[in-house]
Amino acid sequence: MEEGLPNRELLLQMVKMTIPFGKYKGTLLCNLPVSYLEWFYRKGFPKGKLGMMLGTIYEIKINGLEALLEPLKNNSSA
Image 1 (cartoon, rainbow, N blue to C red):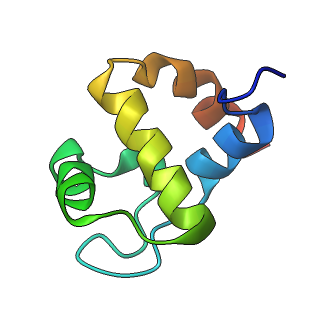
Image 2: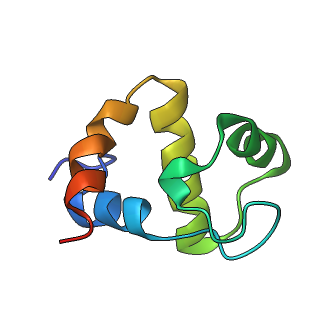
């Protein structure tokens, strides 16, 4: 895998994991609104893996790449 590219496991986690706090507590990371992700971008993403995942979702959404997550969303219940 090339450095800087998210791996499949990380992407799978983003379609299964929910945000554990705040206004959107319980919402899947991949379903968070762009406005919320933009707020984090301005204020700073949390430290650790959650922050990295939120930053990745932010980049995916602002670059119009959400379609990449659709096959994973559809198969995440399997």
